[in-house]
Structures are given as structure tokens and as C-alpha cells.
Length: 111
Image (tube, rainbow, N blue to C red; front, side, top):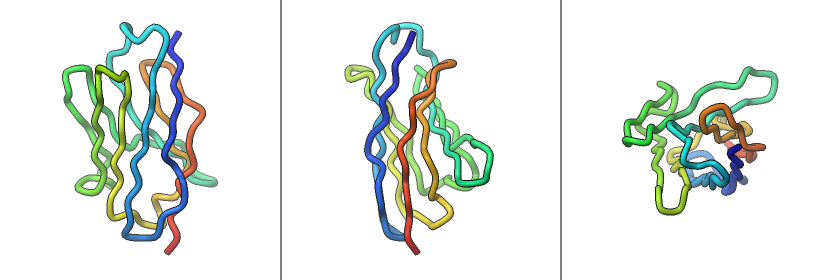
């Protein structure tokens, strides 16, 4: 079992920045890739970014050049730095590790 706790969501203005954190605990030795997903109201959950244990990253086209995913192995934490935020980035952001999901953190971007 892996437990994931997200933090760092909140309200930001368009053009602003936020940094999300996801702290993992439990059977962390089993974690391969970690990622961030988001779900906007009335829409399906979608991939935002992923990072492997080796540091390889992958981003959705909609966030490339604006968001950066990183991980701190010593702290068992993955981060999502979000810059140049847009109203359409408003969503609940979820952390995922293998098959485990966090409960999500709400990001609201005002235009």
C-alpha cells in the first residue's frame, strides 16, 4: 500500500504560479513512476505530467513549457511547479503512484 497526500493548491491569478507537493508513504520501495493528473468540472481526468524513478518526464501538450514535475527521493515527494497559470488550468489535481491515488488538491485560477 502507498499513501499519497497532496498539498499546495489554492487560488491564483492568471499568469501566476503555484507549486503542488505530493508526499508518499508506505510501500514506497514499490513506486516506479509518479504523476499528476487533473479533473476539471464536467470533464474527464487527464494526465498532466509524469516522472519515472530514473527522472524521465512526460507532459501534456497543454502544460509543456509552463509546468515542471520533479521529485525528491530523500523526501519521497513529487512536485509540480505551475507557472503562467491560465483559467483553464482550474481543476482538482491528483497525485498518482503506480495504481494508488491521492485525494486531490483544488487549484483555482482567476482570469
